[in-house]
Image (cartoon, rainbow, N blue to C red):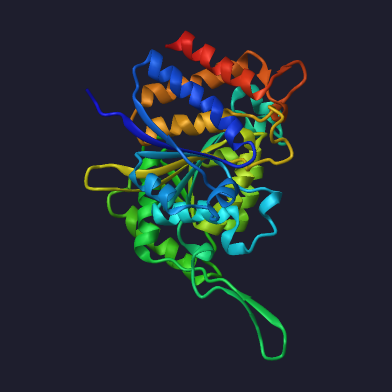
Length: 369
């Protein structure tokens, strides 16, 4: 009998525990009805970890993450902890997880469900049927490059410095994931850079081209400057299949793509590292939305992004494509039935709570399974 999968759950702050509660119920359904086995541990990250441990990510929590087959995270942050020094704010816990787990590839799908095409601020015909994947490099660039910081110059003026830095292996490993995933989709990759003025991204483009010529010639490769890519995402997003780009550009473009779908509450993400000797790939899955302190505790948060993040976990960490498709189809069926949380509410639909949405997903899983 196959060993249970080791899963670390980090609900985090704000609405994180609320949406994660629904995923826990879905995991329970899979354990009861499909015989899946998970060894689940739960711990703290972000603001709640600061309150309990004095740091946004405790060493023991990091040890659990390093030993897990996958980590499922809710959200971090909130106004309570904003006055804290930068280096110990809740978000530093998430950044440390990414860095220590060496999660260099962030997968951000932007999919418009047919039932939600009218929820986007863009015209129906522009977004209907949209299915793109943005792959953002996650451990380099301005976020981690040195030198960095703010200094006071002799004349009293202040200067802030951040360094955009990449090495060729860092570029090639994330581009390889983009090419490999494109083969399972539409076989198109657009590499986004600013090679006309930023030397770091000129090198990025050169390395992507080199890798493309080393066995990926079947993939249609194109290049686009980031300013044009930002425009094209709202002008004609369906021209894209897979977009691969650096950390800062990917941060901005993936949030822009998220809003094409109508709500951040619908979008999952995966952050992946390299496989180890046993084939296990460290991975962290989380919804794109934040901690949403304005609706925390009201029972109105949309759990679907976290549910879909769980589906990504099934697919990418555990090779359970059939089960992942079940979860995704259950989400489609619930939306087709007319149930909506407040963030995706439309005229003529039924607005429901976080818990009712979770219950509806489980009912649909029962019909499918």
